[in-house]
Image 1: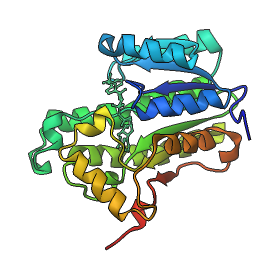
Image 2: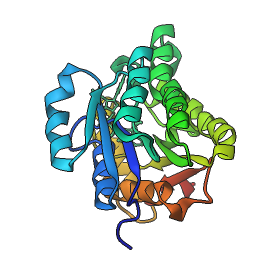
Image 3: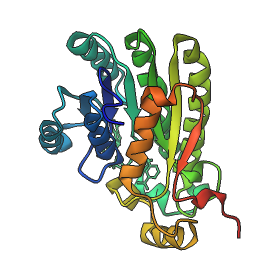
Length: 256
Ligand code: NAP
């Protein structure tokens, strides 16, 4: 079924490089006919993301550090000027200090805790607010989460707590925005080797143990995550909101 997103405009936040889950999502959105807007966090990533944006045929690329309110407001204005509206928002952003992803959780500093929550959870609320104004006839917001939100995963620490806040935010946003026909969901992806994931101590071991235990006996392919984002963004997902959908080769069902 081709062109599931024909006539829709998608904003994708979180493309840093070719390994980013956001890159796979942006590729799948384009494949299905969506118009694309991308952001980069700062000058450090600008050149790389410019190249990827050109390759993807993105029509808009702008800087946006989600901790900066003026950046988020400007993003909303630029989207309104360029496209007049928005139908899809993919939020694929997270950050925690590296030391908080290796030492015991009890050692997490106040500033590290707040930073992880600001970037990884509050940012969804901030961008959902601009999306609400732009999604005049409804839309779909999708974010990325991980099993560490509800289970203790060694070294995931403060990021797990931030993901729990993110998942609760998905439910509250879904309730607020549902009457405007805006759906809000999260994809809980199995571990994938990306720059962010490599910040978690012993990530390689985590990958091995996932593929050994997952019912499908393999790790998660970013393209599988992206295709689920297409489903949620398209009219096929029109009855789904406030959900956490696992795309993890089945790992989350396993006990011993
Ligand atoms: P990634 O490629 O490193 O993507 C993370 C993105 O967040 C980067 O583009 C990064 O930009 C951006 N970011 C961080 N701080 C930001 C800020 N203040 N403002 C704007 N952007 C900011 O890693 P990824 O694995 O694809 O992560 C994407 C999402 O998937 C995250 O929410 C992650 O928790 C989630 N997820 C990942 C996995 C996995 O195993 N990889 C599993 C489940 C869920 P810079 O590079 O410029 O800092």
